[in-house]
Amino acid sequence: MNAPSPEHLAANPLDAAAAALIGAPAGPLRLADLRRHQFERLRETVAWAQQKSPFYRRLLAGIDAQSLRTADDLCRLPFTTADDLRRNDPPLVCVSQDEVSHVVTLETSGTQGPAKRLYFLPGDQVATRDFFVHGMSVFTRPGDRVAILFPGGRAGSVGDLLAHALRGFGAEPLVADWPQDPAATARAMREFRPDVVAGAPVAVLAVARHDAAGKHEPLRVRSALLSSDRAGASLRAALTGLWGCEVYDHYGMTEMGLGGGVDCPVHAGYHMREAELLFEVVDPATGAPVPEGAVGEVVVTTLTRRGLPLIRYRTGDLSRIVPGACACNSPLLRLDRIAGRLGAGVDLGTGELSMAMLDEALFALPKVIDFAATCRLGKAPRLHVDIATLPGGGRLDALRTALTGIPVLAQAIARRRLHLSIAVAADGRLRTRVGKRRIAVDNAA
Ligand SMILES: [Zn+2]
Image (cartoon, rainbow, N blue to C red; front, side, top):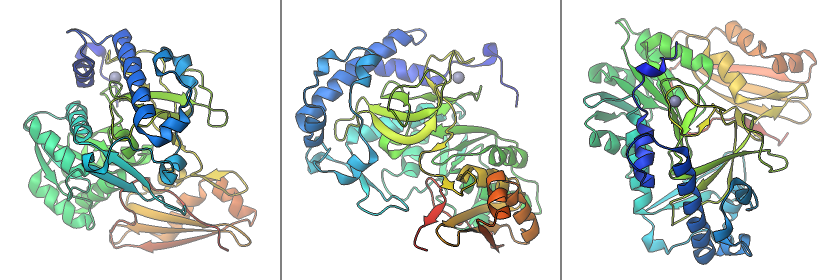
């Protein structure tokens, strides 16, 4: 897809939203105003957390919040980790339970121990909805029909917040929910005829493949927004091929208040939600900032949350800051597509196997809609891949060829270090749930 030239691009709606949030004067958003605002909010957040949160009182003891003026000052602050959130001892939360309007519990697959719990105040949810409005308006127009393939049953869920945001600017949402039965969702899509489809990558792919496998002309969808999990090149190419849509990516996590950043028509990185979040990229081993443009771990600080602020929270996601200015003229920081997650790969002895590698190999096959991978390590290592295809799809030899095209996997099999088993179910149903898919590791054997 050719990137549009700057003169054909409308101003990025995220700029105007950020300018309004920081109280900047009319006209183009200025980087200096944004940075000044971020450090003012950082000082407030640190002072508030020291005062109200038992965890931060201890973690940030001896730090003078008012001294935080530059990126170097920021680097002196200690990190907050996922383990700190899980342990919650002493508690991180800054307010009493009756002020909290929304609690999200994040179970972590493959790890024992307590789940992460995040607390949001009513204002946090309004802020998320507002970000969704501006993020969606990058590629959605008033009057558009927007199909939402995220869970939306509960108040405060992603689907619910998105639908509310879309109605707010005159688009018509349909919360189709997570497609338990993608064939049925595809039929519902045909009736609704969406201009835009938003959902997790595998959910959108499954519905698109079911739609295109029908006896009719496939839908024409103008834009697809993928969020909540990494979307690889083969999946994105498949969607564009099936529906003719331009694919947009959103990067965020519950810890960021769901919304983090969304790419623009140039598709050269997510423009981040900088009026409310402060981003850094650090060396995962040393914690030191990496040079601009180098890959490292994404670290986020919330600037407006008062219920459960996160200060220098290590996300575990690997990315880099895209250097230079974007052709859309937005000064908002860009993070490149997430390159992976720390500790999510599986060491096969021949190198690390990642979910991204499996995605690229399997989603390039036209009938694959989802899969789950389990790796058993130990004496008789084995990788089992449970693949779901459209009805009538999925020849075992083609699937095996695709998988053994992954060099680390092929080498591990050739050296008899690993047994690969494949199960195929041509039932057209998803094998995973919304969220970050990963290779399950079974260390028991
Ligand atoms: Zn841009």
